[in-house]
Length: 205
Image (cartoon, rainbow, N blue to C red):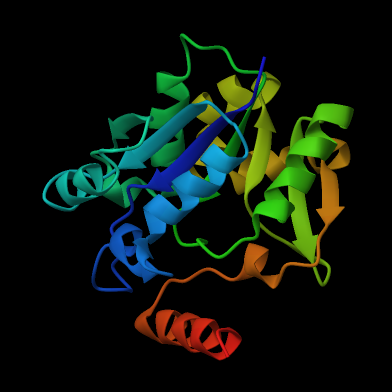
């Protein structure tokens, strides 16, 4: 059975000052760029987690033409783990073997990087598969279904996020070195976004 893909787009975007999911990346909103990459990978079970209105309503409108399940995370102060838990709830009836979890603030990750991660997961079926660049761990993370229950119920994860579950299983994790700095390059602030746009414009020439 194919992997599921989860896009976490339900945060408050407090440091950016505007919904990151709707920022433009090569002519499309971040969230649409990520969805199109997932579609190119033929990951057919797709879940997008959005926040409450009005931001969540705007994100829903942006992805209305895409075949995905949209779930709302009302707990915008709960961090990414709150959004991930909403996604895992939505996947309960589908039972995918694993979920590739892609934060919306990383729209510039190469599709080839994701292909590599998926390839490694399908070969190894590790509890956690994640990319590294320059010896730094990055995203997206592929979580095997064997850890879904822990992600949903761990008190440590409630306090510290999914990294608490990652740390508890690091001895079983598969780290995949990739030649893609974007896996560690979160676009969180206006300065980050301006830098990304400069890099896009520079690469266009």
